[in-house]
View 1 (cartoon, rainbow, N blue to C red):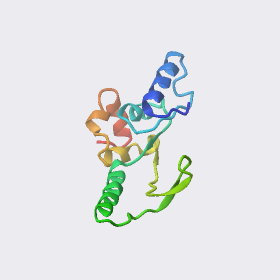
View 2: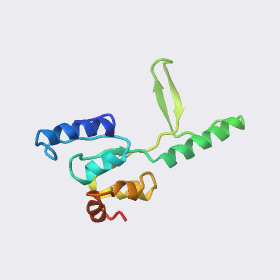
View 3: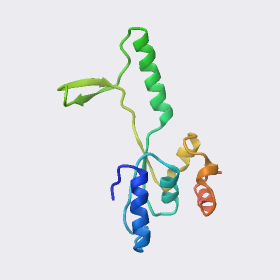
View 4: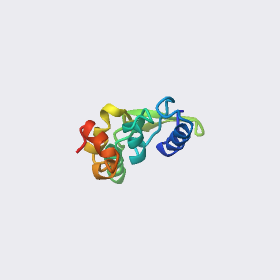
Length: 132
């Protein structure tokens, strides 16, 4: 199941669990939500896509400052606008695939707090993943 986000992925996880298929069906998501990361830690979701908000905010701030100064912002690529039929200068960042072995990156970045992620049954799973 290639879900558009972790919330939809979680719905698929619930159906898989109900039908005894948890961990047997590949389910993905996006947004690195607390629930999505918990699903990854318990093996019911295989991955999520994480887009570091700090990187996005820094890039947006640099562009905003440049525009305020009347300058062209620094970009690193283009995105095709099919409606306007043109390529738009863009700042393209690399999303990160989060799997069981790198869930810690999301907490290290401060995107999800370990105290929220590692509640209850997830405490031991977090410890195994190196999350304190």
